[in-house]
Length: 351
Ligand SMILES: *Cc1c(COP(=O)(O)O)cnc(C)c1O
Image (cartoon, rainbow, N blue to C red):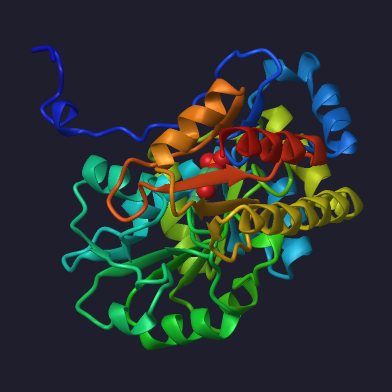
């Protein structure tokens, strides 16, 4: 605390990112990175962008990237908004679309950046409890609301809703913005992007950090009808006109266009997820049905804290949340086959 601080700073509770430690031979399964790395074509494009042209500002409107995303998802470029990671896209969304007189609704077990943004931007929110089996019951969202945000698949549970349920939610709340955060949708979920054509209250947010293995490049995007995108552009141009540098724009275009690499790597992750789920269940774990690149699991006889500690001692890092209802769960990112083998071996050693 310091008298130099603005009044709001002391009241903030910043989001705590998963650690990025330097431990030798570490199996890093704590931040949902994709172990297969970016498309080699994207890496080449990023290298080519490291040129004298860096003396010039990048395209403030990232037109070429928005066109590439629009083509891939069957929309027009002016229905696409891009930002410095989907965290930034979400931050602008909270300011532009989710701050209303009535409260914002999101699940009590969800992406922990949402309450952080609410505090930063002074947004009134209601955390809607997930059901006993950690699923979203749409009926629970039939209450006074200024907006709704929902990750699908949800994090950290990994549980996904079918497109029909998302459509029901969006249709039920025609008078307020509904934002679907699809950070993990490419690992088996159904994207709601096609619904943006029909519903002007729907915004879909995605990222290149997970399925396209570009967490280090910081590129995310949102798709929706023009009035919603216009709101995001107004906030962006009141904050930072150039959120995506030249390398990020070039690399993101190449990554979006390399469909073969995208499919090959995400299918490998999905296959490993099924193998890890089976191996954990064999060892007595309860594993929630995941459509993401991680699993959420608990053991009936061991606390989540003790398991996370034991794994860490064996150089396997997973994420543990010391929060009500989920403190006995571990969120385990799906790594390479070898990473998964080392996880299972370490658990056998502990158990
Ligand atoms: C990882 C994640 C994001 C943000 O990813 P960026 O790296 O900022 O694009 C957004 N939402 C959820 C639910 C996530 O898990």
